[in-house]
Amino acid sequence: MSSRSQRALRFREGSDNSGATAYQRGERSLRANIYQRTEALKRGGRPPPANTVAPAVTGTATVGQTLTTTNGTWTGVATPTYTRQWFRGNHPISGATALTYVLVSADQGYNVFCRVTATDANGSAVADSNLRGPIA
Image 1 (cartoon, rainbow, N blue to C red):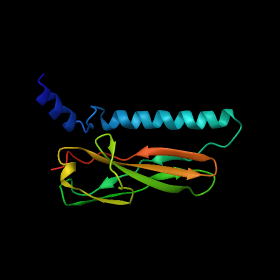
Image 2: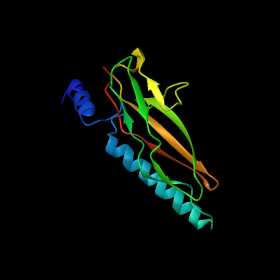
Image 3: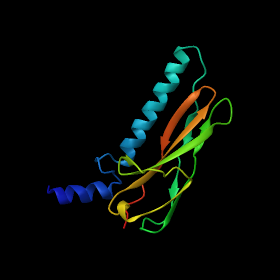
């Protein structure tokens, strides 16, 4: 299969520029979350927040348009606080930490997603949103 065909297949499957599909990224995120919770329980402490519904990004995947993310749904002892980081492919976008992100020309051809970190008194955990793109 040509590299062009492979690239088209990755985009069609919702993969990022490393070739990881959204499903694979979700599996990695879930495994990391399970590991964090298990380690906290081994230490006799309470586990950090756990993501039960992934963050969701909505909006039109076109330069100049605004994407919006949710924090997702989390469990925890107390209400967690949230921080966000938007990504272009697998690279964080400098300064993009709000609930919304306006797509710029540098995003063109890439998938964009948002990583949400939830923190409470017992620690923190991350969850990635769905991919939007490739950006037109």
